[in-house]
Length: 278
Length: 354
Ligand SMILES: Cc1ncc(C[n+]2csc(CCOP(=O)(O)OP(=O)(O)O)c2C)c(N)n1
Ligand code: SF4
Ligand SMILES: [Mg+2]
Image (cartoon, each protein chain N blue to C red):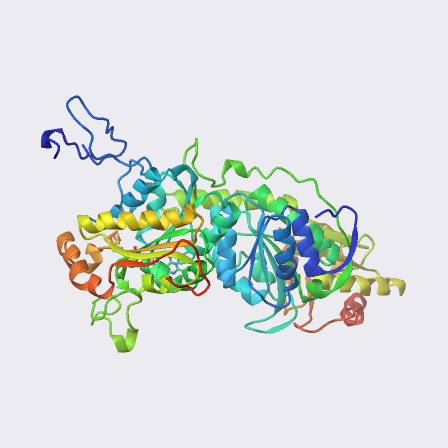
């Protein structure tokens, strides 16, 4: 039964430290996860980083990982995830998150260690680190936010920029001959023997957001169950650098990104095998 | 591993491994490069046998960042490499300095620039003592001249790294790494690391912690860098040097690491021939033992700096003695393996000149 619209409180205000406990006559149906701090984010309107953060926070709550978690933030718009999540965190140099996470997890195997990385961070400057951490089967989980641009530095071409997509460093559109083709990380990860789980999800719609959470849960689980490396690629919008509003950005994900970056689970195993079979 | 009082005939690289184990090493990360390969080779079996973690990283870049991650949890961890690999680690060392993380890094200096050669060299003195990476920071730098000192200094390196929450570099070279000597194993009293106050280990029953170097708030970085500067100032208390026959010396030779040791042999011979030559061998390169040198300079002594490079530490020597004296310089090139006689010739020149 749908709840009475009058009794729904989504959030009263967005200011910091808002008391969200229900007032008389109100029923709380959508709460802030414990793992998320009461703090405004700096993200642009329509940016999906906030949505992805919330999914991570919900899972940390639901899987009771908050007090065991160490987050590795990467260099990109989401570097400040370390202010938004209420978990112990470190900041890794650009692209080196999976190496730093390797060090954390090897030193403290009892901790839950995850990285949160952008496409420039993970698939360009940090390509070697992600490949080898995954291939070693490090017991870490990786949330990979693919928004097809370098958001933080002003919308330059990323390794995931689509052919024909205009950015500040490929103003005429990415050209296959000159810049090569967009890299499909979820598929590459699935081919590596140390990877237990690899999936691609999207944050463009409610249904896809629900699926994204399921995938993230499994990527976390393969770590907590000591199976192997967990990876989720999250197709996300960057309205600011795409020079469009949030609604158009969601449409672009459906019309242009998903056809090139198909959603789905590329690998999900319960034991690792040397051939890297799915 | 029990090693109290036992004497082993081992290479300097192995002494590094044994010393690190005695200091309570928990994690090692490294990538192969000559002339330090015996360090990872030794630790790849010794460390797991003692319940620690050994990872052969995909690159020195990764190794240094694994180190950054591991020490964030408050454990004793290290990496080792040689010159080109140390260059690749500089970004992570800068982050560790900015984040105040106690990483220990061993550099068995080889010839450069570029791929250079794999022979001994001291060309990384500037890189080691001037921070090495970007930004305004310093690392503590220790320079062994014997295999025993390599063992002892590993213990000191970890203690200092945690005492100051700062990266510590041990700068050896191909001679130290590859030479075999008897080394006495000893088990130190381990001081408290006090990492519980800052390490990340899960926010259970306490506020979350954050280890970072990004400081964007108005005035935040300025304040932090002043704090770092004060820390580096306090580190000066750690400055150490070996003084050998300096009291009555007319000429003081200044040389570190292998060169210091070879110079010492030369000085012994010159003494037996009646020449009043002494040695100051900096044991810490940063902080530089400037006071020792200034005191000697004030007594009217003359100076000759000998290095296996074209003149790097000599700048620090000149700074230290600038109110009273200057220093001559003699440089060996990388890959040249000087005997005591090779270093005696420039000493004789200098002591005779007056
Ligand atoms: C070594 C180094 N090179 C370059 C940069 C500059 N830089 C900061 S963020 C970034 C790109 C981030 O893009 P992405 O990973 O896609 O994250 P987004 O901002 O899009 O979420 C770059 C190039 C840096 N901080 N460090
Ligand atoms: S620039 Fe793009 S990725 Fe960065 S906060 Fe804005 S919308 Fe998000
Ligand atoms: Mg991006």
